[in-house]
Length: 174
Length: 174
Image (tube, rainbow over all chains, first blue to last red; front, top):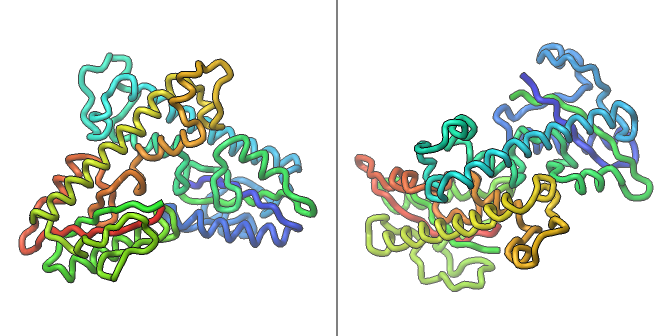
């Protein structure tokens, strides 16, 4: 299975956007388990990887398809963030700091709460909300940095004079 | 900022321990994901740090009085850092919405006394500090893996046949 990562870059033209996008993807892929990615230039590889999306290698962020890609990526990230925060809220309410630190087995939790949290997963949830970069759940990047807030996203979509915001989609196996 | 971390390794002798620790430290600064750069204590003095740690030997036996104390202090700082971050996170999940945590903004109606206790600009950093990611406030490492619980520490210190357990201090920038 592949995740569709979206890299936003601010450049003068498409050619530069693709080059900068690939530089960013090199760094992003480095911290994933597979260490590899493919852009939408390589149709054969996309078929081989069973990526069924049909996208151009570079899109203007302000185009209909570009906006759609960014909005989907952003929504996915918000959902992951919100779910992780919800589990943290429960953990903080029902577990002591020592229990969280030691990833202690859950005991004496109300029946309806127990299935909602896992002691071994809570550290990952903290990482997710903290926004640590090396995480394949980040689907939206500005250069090689994950877009962590709406403020970040707005900044990336409003480049300086003479530059345009582009989005480069890429598939990363997960 | 700089912090003094401790790398625990299993090795035949001090020389091999030091080499193993250097490999672990190189892993921790790789790509500047977790830390930026480090200095060990085999040179004249540590780089950049404003605290004088120059009295430390480059390698210590974990079971010796000096090594033991050094590890205990590392664990103490790790626990203190965890507790501090936990208090910030507890307040954040109690008083801030997911959007406010994500965007690092205060709610409009937050009482002044609570506002004083929450450093909203750093709030996501506190979540990250509770995660499984290397970095502040994890002061102890088993090779390059952060030691996050007593169980982790006991495992790191468990002797292996034919090998000694060593601790190597490093001044590291994050």
